[in-house]
Length: 259
Image (cartoon, rainbow, N blue to C red):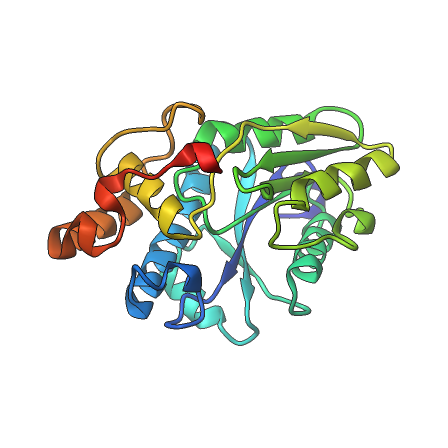
């Protein structure tokens, strides 16, 4: 795809760490074992990238995995479909990874870039479509998908504004608010998407099981998340093997109101 044709396309890139035992989803250990957490991380990645392909049936997008660490490309190539391209890292660190991914995609000629976390496998396809449509509208802007923990699950850009990634208290409940403040300082319009959740601890694992295993969605989130078939199948297998109590998720009864 040439740069001219890319101008009408939005890049969707999931920010992903290699799903290796002991290196990913460590806050899920326990209740999961380290090997289980790594497998679940791989399921998330497969479902998220296949969700990108689902979105491409409605809006013009190209899916990517912005992966880390360096040298792990073969692992990701074996996990995702060939339609998904790989974007190598330039520097370790979340702020740098986000900025560099945005720069690389936008400088390659894409009309917009949405950077998506690797912790929300059931994010509705409609939300991805809405993010892309917001970036296709005239004028500079930033698109933010608020996560229930105070961060964001998606940031969409038309230009790689460095200030959006500087001096952010990453992995805290202040990330979204600080990013909104940075956007205001740049006189950028902020388009806010519906709130969704990250799966990064035992409570949110329970929410995920409610959604994909028990078929119950949370009232405060919009209905009908992406079905995430690989994640759902693995979690059903784990629940059948060890039971909900064995996974420490108390029959899927997570308390969302405290988030």
